[in-house]
Image: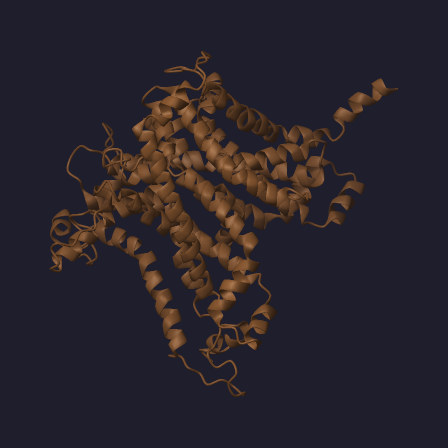
Length: 311
Length: 297
């Protein structure tokens, strides 16, 4: 039974050579030429994709002398966690030597409110667009979607001015607003499409019962659309955690998010390069989105299929 | 009568309008207003601070006479062509392989897609390490005995943009694969059966039947890749910081550096307007094709 999936592939048009062959159950060729080619290619490709992750982990567990002598692909002779400790708590950026931990907590302080605020705004937008459409609403929506394609560089400076005017330039709250703005197009699209696909009768029934805009949103739409909220959270957490451009433009060195600090640590010109510390720092920064990715599985795919427009 | 009706019209559906204020502000103030503002100020000679002192197209003349901008554009073109061609080809092939009802499909898909969860900074730094001439791939192969082996794209200004493209492809092809796989799954099984009955070989079926049928998927993917190409910034910053020299500069970095380091805002605005223009060249025909006749967003 184990190779059932393989032997079933013929009807799907996998193009077996013997398409016109004799009838009856197909002989099972686990090591058929097709399978060797198919799995061989996939395994080689998979190794290529896994290689950088492997090298990162291996390098981060070696001591510097071993790195200088050895081969980046060889497993560590002596496993040491010192680079991880150093990356987390004592690596230097400029004059600060408190490691990536500061960047990590900054990123947490940026990501959590940004995710909440952007999803709150966008879900209400999507709900209004789907169920309470007012005149002109679609025009704003189209502007929003087209705006998603405008290079950020075009809007960076005007936003600097706006934030400076309201006194939030350089602060974490300013960056939270920026993330909410640029997350809006894709999230609004996501929620609008989801709410549109919900049965209209539900909405009507609630209206007849006298529920208003917020009542329907909080008591009916919100509880019924938890999956899409999860997708939105995945999308936003990875997107905002991985952001670099907005972090570098809208924050100051002491409020830099993790990605910016990581880049400063690794690409700093002073001192001896400690590749193991650099790789440990790199993994630490990639860990949050990676964990989310591996836990969420199919939901992540759904999120990026919707969020692909974000580019 | 009409006077008393007016306000009720404006206040009808008031909650929805109030709730949409952030969206309206974002659309009008940031997207439309911000873009118009930048385009307008690109015609001024703003230096440290934005000033409405119009100088016509001067900033654009200066821009196109700056070697660094020309290198940036050239890099963007090379990077763009490589990204487009290879991510489409590799993404499609991987998707087609995964579509053969294979076992461990989820495992393979998870492996191909995980780099997409990583930031460009992480991607750039890993590949900077892998391509390190002393310790990376070049060093390893030299240690094996082939001492004249050379593979140091990040330190060779004539091929540095290819080194960046390798990292970009590693990060991004998983996404393209996913989109293509979704497209392939949308193809009717009967098409495959009919092709098989007619004895058409598999590669021909893909090339002449399936791919033409997937046109919408390809167009959407193309737009996604193209809008990502123009934005490339963090990857270059992490991997090479634009070096060696100015060999791997890209337009987005030019804009950032002129706005925030060189204190030459006018140049930054002109460069970002050029970026906007190049995106529009891709987006407008697509939007026209996609949304032209029917109303669907």
